[in-house]
Length: 242
View 1: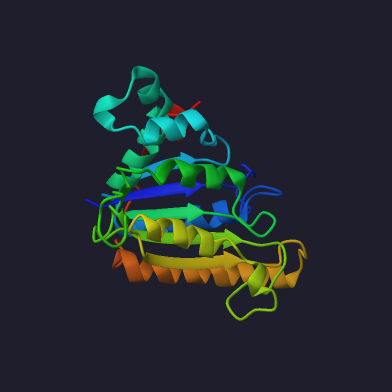
View 2: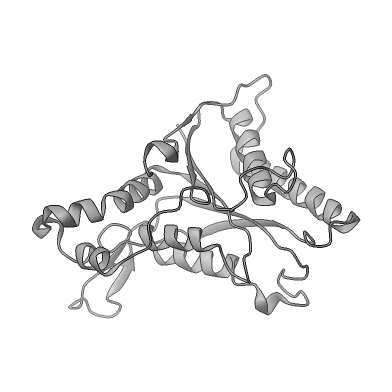
């Protein structure tokens, strides 16, 4: 059975398809998950909303705890790393990771950066050994067949590779880099642009992004199952992090 990890990071709570001033990335991730589960109704879906309930940012105590060998950790260290452990466990379970990451001032939202900082974990998602010959760091999730889908949105346009302001886009590249560091390199993307214009170009960009999402699902999830009912979500983030 496939496990799909669905992550939203927009500060907006609703979807642009159903809510005034709603999130475009939530619209795309919701579409992806609905399309996926219609084709694979046995899929286990884990949902995490870091936009509304962001993980705590990394602190000095967190770093101290993370770099202390597990067998030597004091109780306060285990408590400090508890939420990070939950996030890492979800990632380890997932075969497919679908992330909605809007562009905020040319990069990902701070809420999503906090998520990244919590799942890039020494000893859990990457290895580190000073005495190791060559590269002292290595990915621990390499070769596990995990796939990452990045669904983004931008207020302006021309952020795609070769576009008029592609050099200002630090969303997909930074997300790709972080996940590649821990061994997830099978990555797919789609994005909506022109949000701040709110005209026919936005409507066209939404339509194109939705087609891209449908194409990705068709490519990655297999043939459609007629009459399938989407599976229930499990692991709601509100049951894990306050």
